[in-house]
Length: 149
Image (cartoon, rainbow, N blue to C red; front, side, top):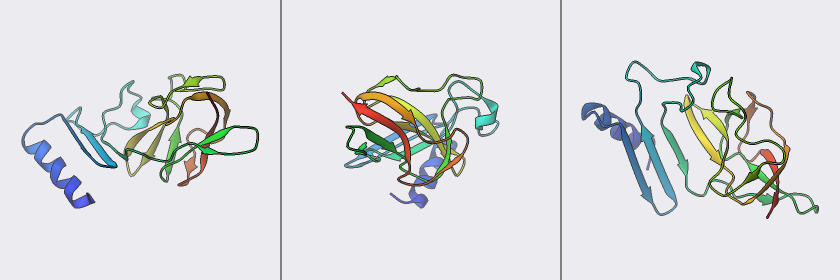
């Protein structure tokens, strides 16, 4: 699915007052949500559940083995700005010592005004926070270190 198809879906959602759309095909999944029709929400607005569209591949980047210590890394599946919490006032999604599962959201990466929830993709305990909050991250950059369970 390319950007033109996504824009067409968004236009149909607007025209038909559809609030949520989800499509899953093989290794691709897209979920679009429309919230407040006055305009898009931004991270600075600080809603507990931001109103934005998300689009991410189903199998982003699996946790890859890091050092011989048995730790793995949760890596960034995209370029963007990392946010460790859903709003500036909220507690981080995870911290050192947090136990996570494959579907646990560990952070948000904002890319082109779209907030993308990043999931752990593995079960384990967070042992280090590598990336800095509110700073740019690169594709494949380590965000967290995790000890698999």
